[in-house]
Length: 344
Ligand SMILES: Nc1ncnc2c1ncn2[C@@H]1O[C@H](COP(=O)(O)OP(=O)(O)OP(=O)(O)O)[C@@H](O)[C@H]1O
Ligand SMILES: [Mg+2]
Image (cartoon, rainbow, N blue to C red; front, side, top):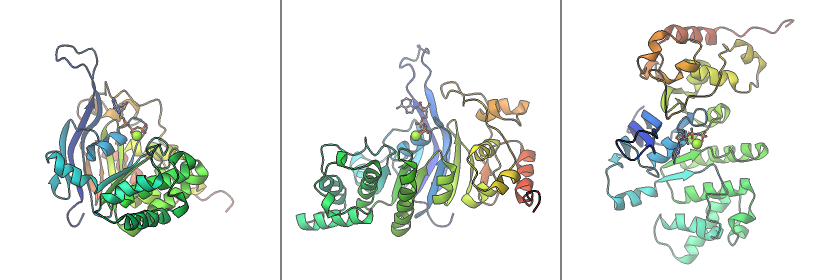
């Protein structure tokens, strides 16, 4: 990555709950995130994918300090936000916004649109009433809503429109970084494409950096520049979108891609099949060594004894698996020309 990152995350770890007393070990803590490292460049969209419970939202929330990390460093624009004062953090809040999955729960039901978006506009500096209103209308227009909506309450909108409001609210603060946590997962499929197009368009227009969280590999491919794949609290693979989808290396990534719906039947044939069986283990009792070993078709004895570290295997492409032979085979399979359907 060239230049300074807008966000740097080092060794981020987050445990939830567990017994409060040192002597009482009856309730084990949940290890939601374990030693996660990544950087995001200004204007970059970094995708974060993984199954439910892998820790994606926890990463998104701890980097904004909506949840306190158990350990690790989060550096935003050169300032370590895990250490700064509350007043400095309040000032930084404007620059770091979030779009939640649930467009119903994330907007105050008792506030009118003008107030909801106006509060975000206020963060950018004092304005006269009229200037503020004009700015709110401008934000509404950016998400294809209008002045007519100013006096309405959130319940008067559809799910897709509410998500447009959430996007307008996030951008009204003129942030430099946004976490989008499954922003279209709660919407009808017919609305998802519109909202994805809107997010992609506004991201390009404003050049805001984004952590885009989704369990849907197709959405991440559409919007992200780079992708991280998460399994049981750890990043198992990180690469550019182009490299990850063409040459997935980690057995888990390959399994995820194999189980995603395939649009092009030719890639379906060419793709090495790795089937994902069973459920992920509990983060309250993760397996020793590589957490994916209990579901991995390529497991070796050594996988139980050591946590594999994320290693760069080609330029900008890292994975955490000791089986380089498997990764190499995947790369060869991906470069081989697809099998021609019979009779053509
Ligand atoms: N506030 C909390 N208290 C206790 N445990 C939590 C809390 N939030 C999340 N967890 C647990 O931490 C783990 C990671 O959860 P997280 O919500 O980060 O996963 P996720 O990848 O976002 O999943 P999903 O795709 O379902 O949104 C899960 O086991 C979850 O049950
Ligand atoms: Mg989540």
